[in-house]
Length: 411
Image (cartoon, rainbow, N blue to C red; front, side, top):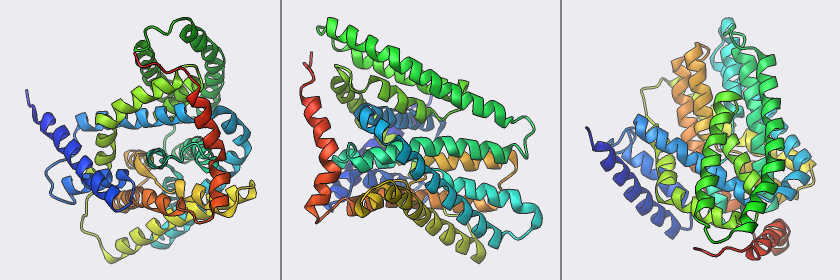
């Protein structure tokens, strides 16, 4: 048996911690250090590590834990009240990148038969990976703010719209894809989530209130439920597993021992799975030989990926009543493409829609947007206007107060 995986994990944990401490010293989120650690260890740096199936699976668990924790920390009432605004933000954050991405691809790919590929590149730009944003906001204590909740809600809807768009495009090249069936599965998934959430939420409180002497079981059962629901979402309904994990967190959120569960789950993520997930993104980055046109395409598509989300989601947030600073935060929080864009691009390669020529620029775009998002979040959340800070944090402060009254005896 090859025990090299032990060395791989050890190197990732050491490098992510060292780089994380460095970025913290320069007042940047530690997640930036974890991403840089992956770049240094991977093909773009020292090339001492490559992503293996084992590391890939651990990183999948890492992002699931991250989104489960985000669901646990979400104020359900605030999320309900911002549902319409999240829909508007997500819509603008999908339409603008799709249009701009299509026209950029069309400029470099003028073959009339490549129209479907150009549309697909636009679809790739619509993707949003909120996992990096979630970790950064948690680190800064801003996840439960008004803008933080708007980002989470909009990203959730963004994933749904992205699935529909991807299905529509792939249906033209794959006769086995039926968009009606896909839509039915999506609707069925969220209907099931509402049903389970309604009954399970009350059941959890009843059990927890009746017996507080054995708290260790709650994090274990909660995490098992998270993994099970992530599996059901992906395999049964075709919805992203991170969406299932987030909803599992929402179902358990605001129950009697949710704070205790959240603390224990976050420890598991912080110790091993989180660092591996963030480092794995850097491990996937490579710098191949590229022509002048491809370099120009890479630069334009990366800039488009950044600014279309900031402008599109920012406009949507502004139309929904967010002040300028909050709207900018929402837009910046939706910039990261992460593993979501890579999954979409890989799907295009497998179906023959996307050529390998454009796959490398997409990987570079993913790496750049993933690394730059926490840096920009740090900037836009550093306010000089104390009134704006108070308004944006008001809901988060109320949530913190409510959590302090929850029994959380660590036994």
